[in-house]
Structures are given as C-alpha cells and as structure tokens.
Length: 156
Image (tube, rainbow, N blue to C red; front, side, top):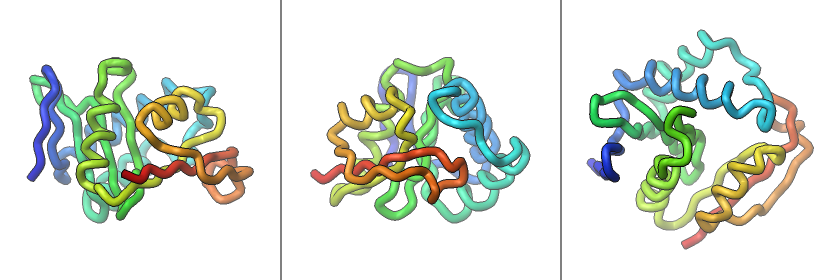
C-alpha cells in the first residue's frame, strides 16, 4: 500500500468507507468550478450512489486526508485513465492536486490519459504544468454533459 505525505495532508488508498466523503468532495468541487465546467447531469444522490458502488467497488480510489482524517481530495484511476481528480475548494492551491497527480504517475509509470472540459482553463493549465499534452479535442457529443472536451496524455 502506498501512503504519501506532504505537510498536514496524507494520501492513502481509499476504501468503501471513504466513498461518502469522496462524493461530497466531488460535489463541492464541481459546484465551485462552475461555470468553467457544466453542472453535473446526475442528482447529488445519484453521484453518492455511484461513489458507493462503482467508484469504491470497481475502480482504484485514492484519498487525500488532512490531519483529522477529513477527506479533502480524491483520485480515481481506471486502468491508465485518470477517471476523477478533485480537491475540496477550501483546499485549492495548496498542492493537493499535484500530490494526487504525482501518485497517479507513480502508480501508472507507463503513462496516463484523462479528459477535461475545454472551457476548464485552470485544469488545462494544471495538467500541462505536470507534463500532460492535449492529444484530442471533441465537440462534447461523447460525454454526458455534451460539452466540448479535451483528452490529455502523459508519457514518462
């Protein structure tokens, strides 16, 4: 099991017990990022259910926790894909996203890929700072939100 620490934040493998807290981080982060990203198309309860079932049971969940154990960030890996990377808005710009992305690279040393929305310029700058390169742009017809997106890839 990998466990990394940076100051008061540690990152550990998530468990089903972390699913509810991770879902709340996802919901708060998505809401705070609007309008750069579209609103979720699923209800909050559907998101919570998805984290309890699919994320916690079928994917690789990692959580960033602060000293009291509160989940403040999450990383979900699905094969070589970064399926989710979110940090609680109260903890933005404190290096947590970078710590989670570094862990993703450590866990997938042969390379990674991910999608983000074209309009999410902050996320795009973040991924590009970390060595990801835009390799495909779409009109959004392939995602649930129907919003233009961009696929990024990282190769060591």
